[in-house]
Length: 261
Image (cartoon, rainbow, N blue to C red):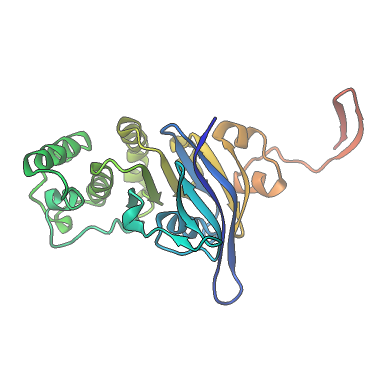
């Protein structure tokens, strides 16, 4: 399977902390890749480097044959030129703009009739039909999340980046929106890289899984494969796999291993 996003880079921070990405790849088809790990492991930094909001100190990022960042070649494409949709944890809505104007903000290249049609279609699909004249402060947390997603996908970006999209919601709202969010992402058919530290969220939303630990990628692959075959005890611990037991291989003959537990 060909990959649409290729990323291998390092980002250093003052104080010695560093984030290292080794051959991160996402499929060429519009799947949902989940960047998963505990809080503070570097997931958001990875997302911001891919978005062009942070500049890596070494390495490269390439999307669909286009170089977004290459420190060796001194290339760094700014975020506005990467044609991405980005939803931060706090949604980043413009408080003084209505829902309609928030969603239409990135559609300046469309003619006014096309712009109005695109906004109306997106709001209807996302479940906000009839709320276009409201301001963000007049919406619930779940509705604000929908507006942020609608604004990101209305432009039909090449890549959608979601940073903990449900973390700011209360538990009942978060649970009810999980299934809806996957349905929306499927409908818009945009390759998506989603950051979360919530195991249930990763399982409910992801097709591919990238596990991070202490600033490093330690496993990536189809979600079911990573959960069923963690490559390291740290991966099993992060995924809360409860059947991990210490053992020692005592024999390996004809492809069959004997393990003492």
